[in-house]
Structures are given as C-alpha cells and as structure tokens.
Amino acid sequence: CKKNLRVLLDMDQVLADFELGFFQEYRKKYPEYPYIEMKDRVGFFVKDQYEKMFSSVPNIGNAVANIYNAKKFFLNLPEIEGAVDAAKKLAKMEGVDVFICTSPIEKYKYCLPEKYEWVHKHLGPEWVARIILTKDKTMVNGHLLIDDRVDIIGAIERPSWEHVVFSANHNMKADIGKRRRLDNWTNGDWKELIEDFKMR
Ligand code: T3P
Image 1: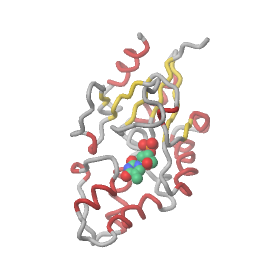
Image 2: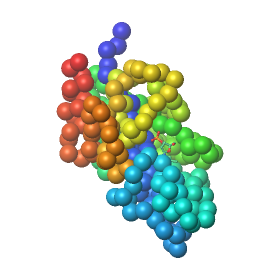
Image 3: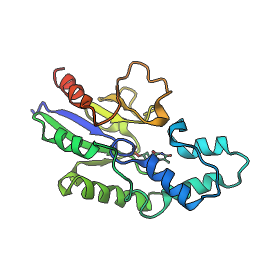
C-alpha cells in the first residue's frame, strides 16, 4: 500500500490568477463602469461584492459575469507568481502525489476545456492526468488541500484532507479558525508545510 502524501492544489488563485485576469479584462471591456481595486476585494465571489457595492448601477452583475464566462478567459489567466515552479518541484518530491482539484463555473462551456488547456500549457501534458474537476471538493480524498476559498463545504462533513488557506486579497480578513495559511509560492514556506505533513 502506498503511503504517499496526497496534495490537492486548487487552481484559481492558487495556480492561475483569476482575480488579476478578471480585473484587467473588466477594466478593458467596461472602462466606464465602477470597479473595486484588487486590494479591496472581500469575499470569494467577485460578482457578489460588485453587486453589493454598486447596487445603483444597472446590470453590473451581468457585466462582471460576462468577463469570466467569455471564451479564452480561463485559458489566458496569468500564473500566480512561483506557482508553476513550486508545483513542479512538489510533484518531484519523494513520497508526494500531487493533484489539481478545481471547480468549474456555472457556465462551463469554455471554462472546462480551458482549464485543461491551461494546465497542459503551463505545467505540461503529464499534468492533465492529475486534474480532478468537481463542484464538491469534500468528495475528494487527500491529505492536504491548498485552496484560497474559505468556505469549502459539501456532502462530506469531515473531509479526509486538511485545508490550508492560500492567501488572497479576498480572504485576508476572513476568519479561518485554526487553519494554517500559505501566503505565497515564492518565500519557500510551502516546503516546510509539506515536510510537516509528511512527518504525520
Ligand atoms: P477553483 O476551484 O479552481 O478555485 O467557481 C468555479 C471556479 O471559478 C473556482 O475555481 C473559483 C473560480 N471563481 C472565482 O475565483 N471567483 C469568482 O467570482 C467565480 C465566479 C469563480
């Protein structure tokens, strides 16, 4: 029986920069619309905060959704700094199995294939087999889930994985209880995190 540490990496805001991609496209497509600076983003869903902050602007929610529902949005997302390099190093570590665990958006038409293409393009063809697409991450078995979303809930009340919160502007003020954080892929903290989990 294999005793490898199974690490689940979320995709948006852990590997691919959804928030930056959104901000840039939104400003480009709707320069006349009000916007929220990236540092002021609060809460997981962009649309929720825009609709709340700019409730007097008609159709602002649709404008927001048009950005991430568009063809090539997910494909063209920039990398989170250091993520691809760290993921590759992580996958090469002895005793570690890495998977990408990501949820599609409601309008899945472009999002689904483009998530695959993004992984192929940025990480390589062998990574495509590591993709787990699901709306319910609690159903996925693993030891560690690195994810920026604070409220990961689903059918399983006590998932097998421990959730480590990957820092993002939108979650900096959130109450994460006893959970650990990983702030970035660039300062080397992720190596310590993995070593800690391997020793359990
Ligand atoms: P992931 O599971 O890789 O983090 O909701 C579906 C996916 O799109 C999910 O991907 C998160 C991402 N997403 C955001 O990050 N912010 C949003 O406002 C929306 C609608 C989706």
